[in-house]
Length: 155
Image (cartoon, rainbow, N blue to C red; front, side):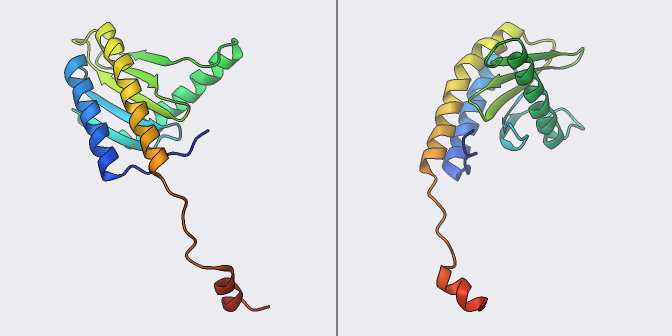
């Protein structure tokens, strides 16, 4: 498991550009980049009225985790995609890396094959942005030294 990157302004813009391009080509309604804990790293598109993307992201992460465990139980390392189909909306969840998932929502007017095709192209783009964001992170510098702590809490 890798560290979830801090999304800088630059990385946020890169993710937004990648999602914009993906949605235009795939004709999907919306896309979310989430971590496996359900936190939204980026989102773009036409969110359905009354939808809470925070809850959707958390549920998608849980669904993906359950599917990953199913894969393990049948001897697969992982399933790279998960498709959910309803009457009004479909979701396609694609693994970006071990800790990040691309969630795409689209209606019945959009072909699943088109979304899958462009998701396969978007995933490496998103993965590269996430990897760059991880690489750009610097270790935190302690605010207080051991001497500061010792002075504040003498024995």
